[in-house]
Length: 115
Length: 112
Image (cartoon, rainbow over all chains, first blue to last red; front, side, top):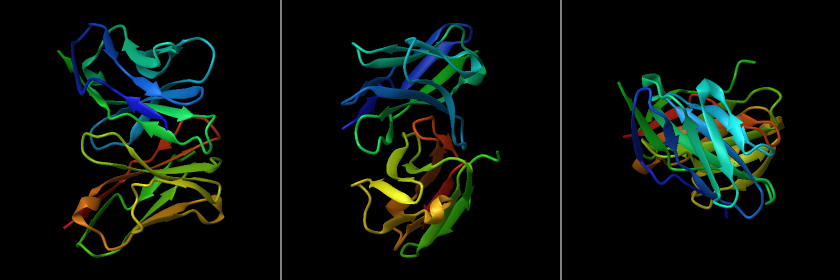
């Protein structure tokens, strides 16, 4: 069965510093990987995805993520954090080689960017 | 493209009552998903459809929960005999084949 782990419940970073939000996954086949952001009382917004190709993918709002197959990780990064980046971040995985390929989400990481 | 629409946005009900939520996906999307989310937690998979076919239903879902997607367009999620533990945000999302999910704003259920 597929699963997603986000080892940090909370990440605090100073404005202007680089940020990393960690994600590891487990699937039986090749994964499609996603990052979503959620602001208070809002639905989830898509940030970026890895399907195939270059291990470094770029997405919305200056975010990027690096796919590492050997470590089964897909960490979210941003070179310079903004206060407005403070939100909940969710990693998700789709196992395209199992039947029905449902999308499973991690437990989330709360990011706080301190002015 | 008006995005994914969910109604009602907030439902308050008494324990034991039935509630129904509606989701209108992005029109060309053939896949539709339902998730449940409690405060500060990740979305928990409930069920999903490809066109009108319900492909999988979470084993965590009791028989009180049922979902339909007639004609492969909008979907409804019904909860019968609601319990206080059903209080949560119910999220709907749609997608093309294996693309990213597009979420609605959610329907918040409060069971008194």
